[in-house]
Image 1 (tube, helix red, strand yellow):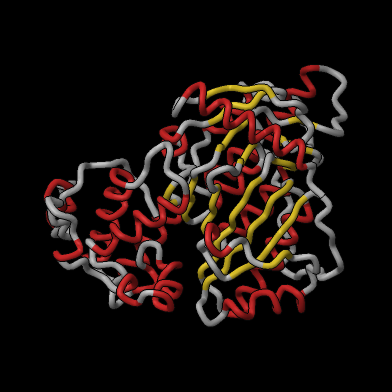
Image 2: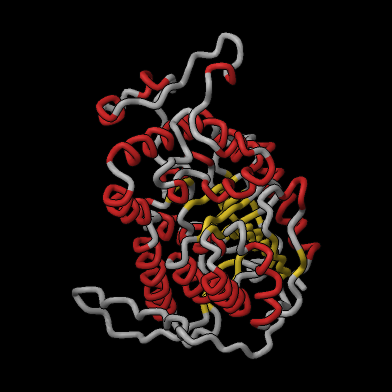
Length: 399
């Protein structure tokens, strides 16, 4: 199992950094660079230095066919559930059998609502990559379209993170790093792959450790690392995160950890809507849901950043704020409910309090003295005139 003492020490480091620096970035020491971390072991093909830098060797992808042979999460723990309210409902049932029948049995109850949450605490490694592949396959077979990965990880293997991240990016997952959780080092590659990233915990990076290296000189080791970082840059670019994250990693000794501030997470594309996926969705939604839907969705995202995000907000508060705010932009949309912001909550809300799942907030719902927040017109939203919607202008992104 994942060493709880080590995880506790990392959490304490993250909390101490938050106390000392507030929302600013901080660098802290870690007890062991090999525990968690960002470790690379994949072979690289070294070439002689040339005037033009060679393309990095690709990381082998996951096979489409799943090997359902027994696996054990020796360095992690997983649970599956249909509820998103972890504070009241917990994290679902622990997953101890990772066979197809066991995962199907655990998720069958989620099929009616079309929502599931995988809670994972532990290292990023080949077993985690296999777990993500298996759960995704079963969710596909059961028609569960809304998927949340609720992760708490100090890192692990770079190549396994890239393989799992590419699988996750193709499968429409939302990634949570909730309060009290961490996403350090190789875990950041998992975070980058989500369609939507909701972060209340601590995200940190440091230099990749090159294990099993055949290098005998500093120059050879440097060439190996350039190949690995080339793979990382390619991965970040195709998954909507800034390649500057890879450059920052190179500058932080692997016995240290640089905690990213909230504004950096947004700046480097690691929080809110994945910009790469957003480009694809914009084209699809324009055709399916219409221009008005896209305009309201963009305006909601700006308002969410301005009104809901704050350094001390936990994930429950972020979700609650977003659910309330979206009603003022007429979401969920009658024509495209599944594509509406935070639609993963709709089936759950409809079963509990149906009025919360409907669009449009009546004036009576507003507090005394609160200005009505009407959805902006298309022309107002194009101009970025958020004041017309009753919201200050915020940064791009959001759920």
